Amino acid sequence: MRVVTAFGAAFTLAAIAFTITMLIKPPVSEAKPAASIDTYSLTLSAESMLGKNYDCN
Image (cartoon, rainbow, N blue to C red; front, side):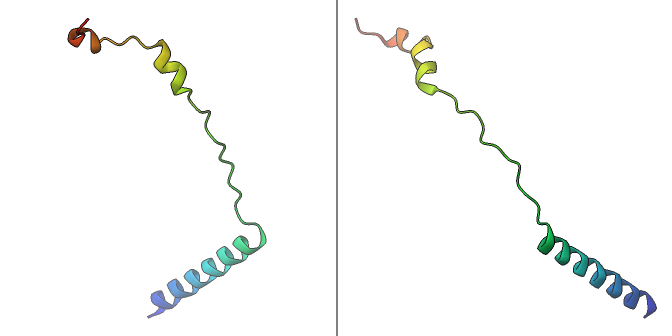
């Protein structure tokens, strides 16, 4: 029973410390948007090898 009580006390203390930390200084996200890829310029410069086998002209 002593181990369960010690575990409960430690868990309660950790929960209180976590709650106080989140209220005082919450974490700030440092994520930045990724650079976008210009797909239009990629399609203009791409060589189409698939259409040559089925070209009717």
